[in-house]
Image 1: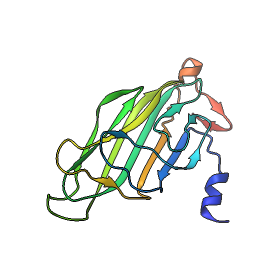
Image 2 (image 1 turned 135 degrees about the horizontal axis):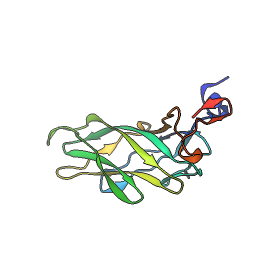
Image 3 (image 1 turned 135 degrees about the vertical axis):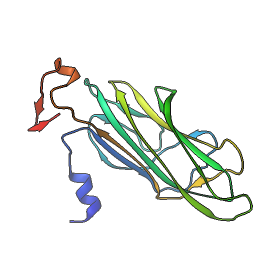
Image 4 (image 1 turned 90 degrees about the vertical axis):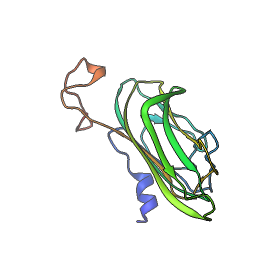
Length: 172
């Protein structure tokens, strides 16, 4: 079985989302990033390809680990990304990187953002990318990835008043 076919067939029991962008570069010009491939998505999340909002789609709530990374190219300039929740910047969630010194051509670097956030039904997150100064770096095609992972906590489930909750044989 091919790897991609395998990923499309698996259905994780806990909330999980993995999306990536293979369609080309995105400039860090004060935009919310998008992804054109949904590799793994449980029903807990709602995402439409090439849009910038990922919604929590269940009646429960919980802590979600957000992992974003992308490779940048540019000829000098700073790139930065920040997590947004419901249209507002999340404090402490900004990451910076320099894509080379001014005058260098085709410099590459990586920017990573890891954050843990509490989400409830209807909440949405976005990844905002901009350049505070200098030349504008761009993502490299097929390198922008975003993962959302539910963090299980034994003995606490907000939807059941704190009781340990088993669904599908999986402790949540």
